[in-house]
Length: 473
Ligand code: MN
Ligand code: MN
Image 1: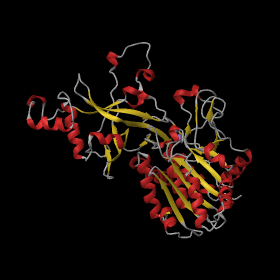
Image 2: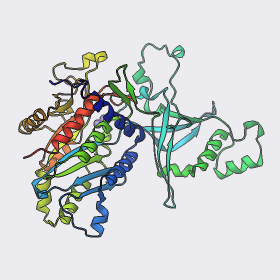
Image 3: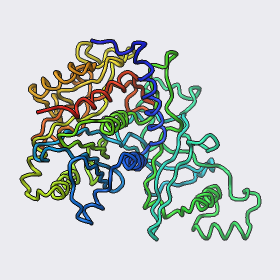
Image 4: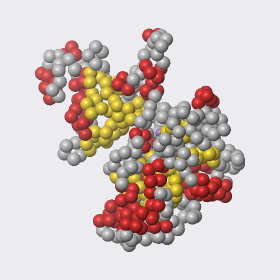
């Protein structure tokens, strides 16, 4: 094991992580990630594959293209000099993260308190209680019937208001049987939105208020809700618009350095934007020209990778077929071969050993923060269910590559057997017959509002991905 931290490369690690912190602070939803990745790719000379398909513009070695689907997943390709059917070098990561989504009819006023709240339905595996008593921001998109859209981001700027889900004060919470975890249920994750009644309750009845209540078809007692609806109107959002909206509640604020020595990053959505960002940078910085390179940044991993923007979608395969056609190879066999002959790093975070919960881990087989990128031969749970199982032949090839490039890595599992487990996108791309292995940075607090990573691992992941793009057959 080489030393990750030494005076020579510490500055390089810290500098790299400044940009990483900016990326995860500014991109807290899959849509925001797609838009940012697309803008970054355009600056690197990537063109929209859709335009090239429309104009039947042929592709050649050195060309760079991107393809987005529903603005929620994006694939990047850099065409190599070898035939596409020789396979690609693929870096894959997911850009969705656990969070709270607004329900289709989210807004209501509590009768007793006259507090107005947003009702939420959580996304991904969360511990409910962790989302209470902390500042929250609201991000998303509202699609109007006239085809226009309203983008929302409230709670990130210093002058913005933030939001909060309450927890019961300890004074009234002395019940011995309930633990923090089972006390707060999903249905109770309601976000406080406001408390001022429309023009003040005292002034009611009032013709102006009556008009607003009539406009919103609201009962007279819901004056605070009316006031909030008026505020939403200033954002060009009507009550009914929530049914065609995608609004996500996430922790408010930026990613921060953590520790007196600034060793760690504390930030939201590091699962799996930590692997997405490092993969993206590696793709941009790669000097590999022979094999076609691909970057996958997909949605829906946290709920099983289904849907048009998830890895199970045929969209990636379709885009490979489109590229193959623009390279002058229209045989479906060429596409099957391109996929089958590819090598892929399915990059996702894993659990880092946590000294506070040592019992959950197997010291000999778990990942440690600050010891480099972590590789998992298999993931899954209950006897590896749901896992891709990387072949030892492929792992040997990866070992050789990592050692040759002085990259620190660990071969790990996620926690003790039957303690739990988790899945990734690896098993889906493995369906093509390609060689794929799971790897990524270990985290502490995974799936909590604020997750912890080691800066040394972030930089090591970037180096690993860059080396991988040069992997020969
Ligand atoms: Mn993940
Ligand atoms: Mn996850």
